[in-house]
Length: 192
Image (cartoon, rainbow, N blue to C red):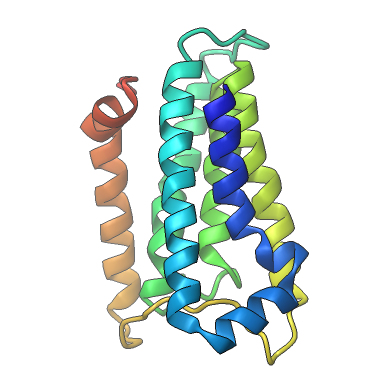
């Protein structure tokens, strides 16, 4: 569990600079953008690797806090469908990407809520709960950023009418891939 917590501190800590120190982010990002991006990326990658290793180790012996009823599995699976659509939405501007100001944060919140409904161990609560709290705090922080310190914008494709169709097809394709095989291969838990 220690590796998981350390990974969460590094990964969510880097991603929380805008929450707790937006002026720090603006100052260093404007002075040395490449250095900022490299440092941000390295710390985030190290944190993510520690989260994966820590969660993999801790989930095998974690205490069960609650057992979800079997019917909740269908609700969880339904909640996951828009996750992949919202996750890719910032890159494909259109009507779907405008449904929420920060579609990837919406994806994170839906993902974490769905996984908290389906998984009731201590390690699940730590991992998914930490990300859910972070996503809520990050959304609040991003909504109050001044115009001279905007959130990072992803590289986007040109806005076209086809983007929403591409986005839905892409999101559902990735969802089906996770449902049928990727979740089993990456996480070790079969969903169907």
